[in-house]
Structure formats: C-alpha cells, structure tokens
Image (cartoon, rainbow, N blue to C red):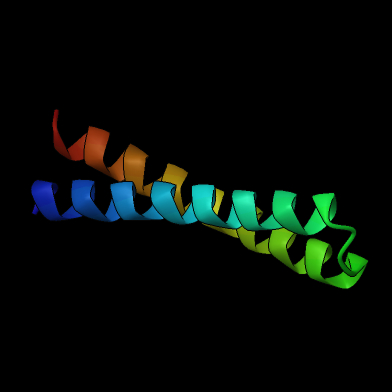
Length: 62
C-alpha cells in the first residue's frame, strides 16, 4: 500500500510541475488572464493533494 501511495505522490508532483509550466507558458506568450487564473487554482489544489499524499506516505512508513 505504501508503494502505491508513493507512486500516487510522484504522479501528483509531476502534475503540479506540468500545470506550473503550462501557466508559465501562458503568461510568457501573453495568454488570457482567465486561463492563468484557472491554472493557478489547479496548481494550488494539486500541491495540496501532493502534500497530503506525502504526509500519508511518511506516516505509513513509520
């Protein structure tokens, strides 16, 4: 179970990185502000999920 949660945490971190780069790309090319706002909200939610998964993995590894 711990290995599965570790895998999910890595996937969540990769998703955060992807959304971060999408948001940066949107800002650099001068894309719509609404899209940047949605990407920022998605990034924050993914970061919260990733942090929660990391905490659960660490607690289970005790």
